[in-house]
Length: 79
Image (cartoon, rainbow, N blue to C red; front, side, top):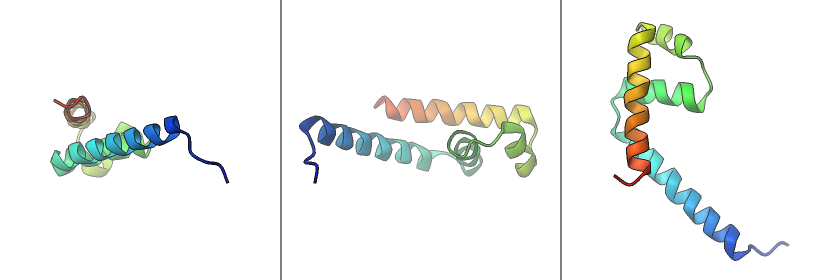
């Protein structure tokens, strides 16, 4: 059995904290913005695919994604 090093433990804790901040940020988003962000950034779907599914134009989907990205970045930076 490998014994975790101090660095690997610190990395794991920092990852968990980042993960928690990201989830917190996603929870604050309106449903459509959260859905666009998750589908495009986490599930690697195209923006056009998601826009079509939601019945919105590409521009509206792009704006929703940009707003979501701004919120997630802000929370991840601790602001």
